[in-house]
Amino acid sequence: MKATGIVRRIDDLGRVVIPKEIRRTMRIREGDPLEIYTAADGEVIFKKYSPMGELEPYTRQYAEVLHRATAMPAVICDRDRVIAATGRAKKELLGKRISSALEALMEARVSFPGDGEQTAPRVSDESEETAAVMFPILGGGDVMGAVLLLQSDDAAPTDTEIKLMQVAAGFLGKQMEE
Image 1: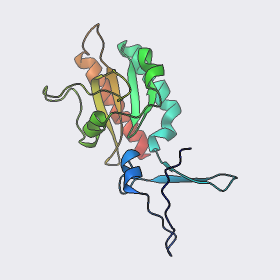
Image 2: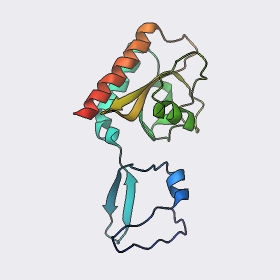
Image 3: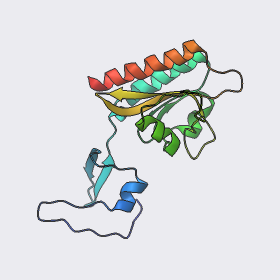
Image 4: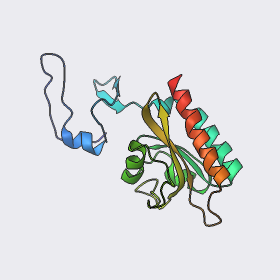
């Protein structure tokens, strides 16, 4: 755990303010759910809650199936990090924070490739991997994450592969509603 040097007091209603710098760094927005953990040594830990994280075992299997069907690396992410990855990028991307470009596309509910004027978003700022196809996962009207196929030197994704990714995003979004 990393100390920030910031100290806050609890008010009379039991509230504590998370400083703006930390909210910005951790991409915590107003209304975001947080999980609260306690440790035996008296620590209280706040962690961003990811509904997609609860589907993690299934997303790994789904990404594997997408990879086998398309022969392209597949990635599934929540709003903050990569939760499933296959192919050449698995070790490089799994658990990494998504790029701000990818986050912006998801928040705008825009798929990629879109109108042809967008540049391929990098999956993570820590990686050179870029998306060939990206569809946001929408559940209950909210953006939950995205499914991606990564760029490949071999060939561009076909219309069928693009449609397959759209179906994958729709299916995972439906799972989030139930």
